[in-house]
Length: 588
Image (cartoon, rainbow, N blue to C red):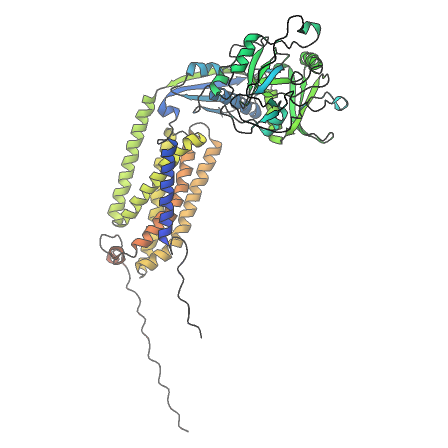
């Protein structure tokens, strides 16, 4: 008969506590190393701590139902792209209520220029493309040319766009931009392809006798020499250069422009159609022609007449002069080609996804929206005020932490060593993660966020108390320390998880339904709650398992916090083996 197997050591922090401790210490080292390597050794401060300018924009409209969630979100996206283009990478743009947009611009930026940018309505124009090229410093990868085109109706559909006149054509890479959101693949497919040559230059300006004018019914493709020089020197990969490009340009001026991702540059003619004349733009899936997701736009009377005129002129040109650029704030959103005269409505198709088609339709819709914004409030925030409040908050937090430590020392004595070390580990993880989240997702530490971190001290301390009390309950039942830790942990674990789940759920709901700085409190509270679970499972429990093997704690030293006499431990039950009854020998 095989000998019975000995009990296996359980996996995880109970059987191998050293592994759990090594894992969390390795995570701390990695986060600290990443913090120093990235150069962001301190958390990014919010406007209330760093100072700056807070601008409140209130939307107004003469048309009912124009101020809705979709239009407000589109406006936020445009304003965010504007301030980011000025190099204000730490600005916060978000909606507040149903008709307000809050723009927080931190100290150290040109707040006056930013205020002028965010207070104006987006300008949407349709301009003919006179010349185009890949940006000199932008990488390009070879791909088929775009297949975007316009169509008036199914019976008058336009053919796919022609390939670039260059012998080698390339499309921009799909990397994200430094100036706000990245252009999606669908928009890239609908955009014109550019020449792969880094030294591409615009065509020479034709002589006055050869150049056509708009008055003759043909397209004016002449390019002034100063514009050609500016086009050659333009670097669209520079976000600040793009932001300061064409600040004072008029619709009647020819301009140089960049694509939103900075990989292409254009010379554009005068505005042929104003975005205000777009009456409707929508996205949908083309089931009849099989073009996939398309963007449909229609014009009012004036826009229909202007669009018919420009498409008639463009259809007589060759690529790239048969393209019209859709510009938003003088940046090219899309540049489809035209091969037939269009009027009233048009369709733009290419390799759109549902998201990219909706993005383009929102951009086109915003140019026609009767939304204007009033600066209802412009406040300059001094860092001194926030600094004083932060100083007071830190003092309150330090006093609260000191009271917690004193309570632990007085009541738990030696066990307070475990609690204090766990608090230190939790604080280190919180600090490093906050420092890394600043450049990663734009997280800014404001006063409500500091309050959330202070509240988290109580949540973390509560987890320790639950665990310690479960161990003491097991000791009161007469068990020794190691079995008490092993048996008390499952019961404590359930209580800790339920408590932290409720706390995290509250933080998540508050983050979703709140706005502005209250979200900072909710985010910090949720983050520290998750870290509490990690610290208790990977540090507090393994450390307690190791200390339970030490004589100081296992013997119940009076200063260990596990003194049997102080806990009223019952003596262990002694089982006395009864002697077996003698069997009487029966006589035969």
